[in-house]
Amino acid sequence: MLFTKIPEDAFEQIQFNAGILVKSFDPATLKVEALLGATSGGLDFKAKPNYIDWGEDIDNCPKNTMELKDISEWDVTLSGTYVTITTENVKSMIGAADVAGNKLTPRNHLELSDFKDLWWVGDYSRVNTGEKAGFAAVHMINALTEDGFNIKSEDKQKGKAAFSYKAHYSIKNIDNVPFEVYVQAGTEATKAAKAVKADDTAKA
Image (cartoon, rainbow, N blue to C red; front, side):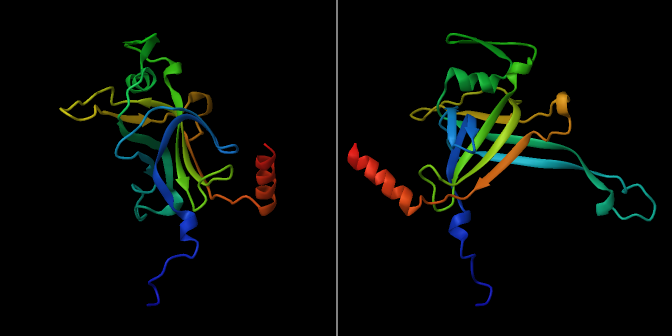
């Protein structure tokens, strides 16, 4: 069959498993900082552009003429469900709250410190372990929850807390879209590097 095929490098282009939600990730070193919690049911990231059609009310101009279309802003969200409850992820779900020890006190006003960057990072490609592991990552900028905080508990089940974070623009640089995406295939260590590492292990 002529068209029943897949790319030969398909295994290098597959994202695996649910990934993790963290406060910080360095794409250069693969260092992650502060997992926000264990999740259930995976994570759902969406970046939806809102379009303006400047030609839709012009006589003789068809709607959706590409030369007259533009983007007004992006709606950027990430949702999922926590199955672990910590002071930190509860604070992130409440949004406007102050933390003192094990107590969280909600506020009726937002502060700029309530907006936090978040990262979703997932395994990607055939090589997904080691110092050169492949990864797919989304950096959400100035994230804040808008659905509030809830816990659903059930008999003989784990408690679950659904969340939905939204990224926000900043008036300091209104042209910066509040998300970034990274896609990096993994690379295996060279034979020379493997030999040096094996030699170091033997000496130890």
